[in-house]
Image 1 (tube, helix red, strand yellow):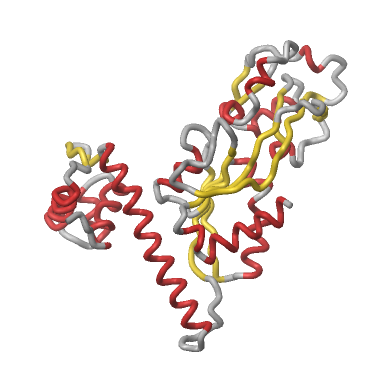
Image 2 (cartoon, rainbow, N blue to C red):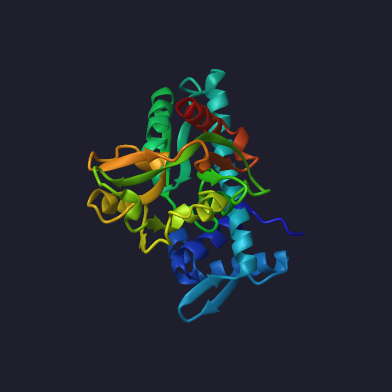
Length: 297
């Protein structure tokens, strides 16, 4: 039998989050021996070592990382179940209130989406459902990105870049919210902007159309790598160089920069959402997706 009780799942998550058995025991109000006993029982039933024990604490093994992702997602579903059942009871007149949505809604988003797409959607969402408490984390859209946060159970929904090079992971569901084009950005009034050094940032590499980029003879290799799109825009505005950037990153661009259209063959990227199949049917996630679509549309 591999069934683990919610209490055992909470112990696993606490050990990983606190970095050790002693700290997890304090956080949970348990003894260290009880925490150790619980973890050993979980490992025995799952048939794998979940933590590397050492003087510096406890570190999840690859098997442990997989178990923790499921543990966080199961615990989150239990929270959602309780919230929605209580809401349904309230709506039926069994409890107080009118069955309004309530509780935390965890969102992972990359920087430009968090700045320019998400706030309006959350404003509309919380106006309609004031009991919802959005918890937003800014995540770099590189590697596993925001989708990884959802897979690992740290977020209910992720705002992600989608496409052939970064499709929706098979374990998740999602959809495109907006298709945005790229533009050339350069210092306003510069007589020869294409002669300037090219500025880029790591997240940009996963989203532009690589074939288009490689086919532009006028685009030199990037000689400056900035931390994020905000830093790129700041450098361009001071005359340091030029950049090729997506539309979301250019919202609110200062007058010191000029945005030049790259024509009908310009690269584009798809910005969308990802969530788990289970949470996709939850009321709060469905409500947020509706607002995101309304804003993007």
